Image (cartoon, rainbow, N blue to C red):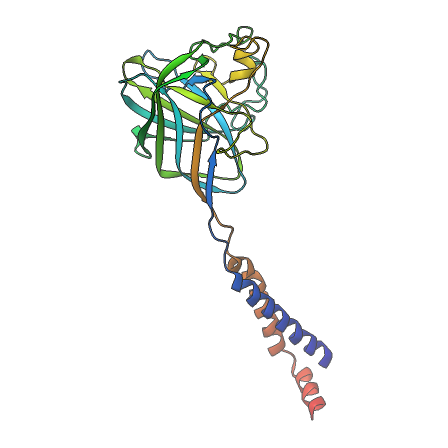
Length: 307
């Protein structure tokens, strides 16, 4: 009995020392998150706008990966607008990767849904809903993209149009601030910005290099840009592989594209080690109670052995 009691006490001391050592480390701190695809490369410009009366919705999407839960507080994206156009609304949507949030199997209207955005959005922020604000920064009074996609968004078998040729406009960076941040678990996502301009003018989202190069943030698993309009919904097309195919500005070459955007936020820390240790500390308290409540005969034997 003496040996059992001594073993329990030694175990209690070791457990207490380990608990104190871990508690000294404290909870994990939140970290800064930043991601960017880099600067515009002038190769592609894709329309992306909300639907309004008489104007069909178009969504352009490019991807990013989060390795842990993250609060996205702000974003930038860069595109072309006609000189003198007025921005009436900005919308930012987040999609997950198919088949999440989707009907599976798909309806066969496009070549593939593998690695596409899902059928429906995961979350969104909108100036009209008062959960985001934005400012704009003019980067250049005139910027040319070699190719574009606006109306040429069709299901099979007419998806390969080659694009609609060069477009030129004022190069503008949109700076979006999410007054209600996106709270996103670790996952693979698509970023979809939409800009509504006055008088039927179109916003064109500019492409970025693929693969990503500095000052962008390269990552493993980078997917190409996708696009759809309301007529193609819930399907998506790959801007390069499906639409441009080998019919674009460089004959025989099938290009792929990223789109120009960045994200800023903070990672959410893991649960505090204090909470993780609570069950162990409760158990430790129970061990002490068991020692104090040992039977009288055992206590008498221990006293006799010490006499």
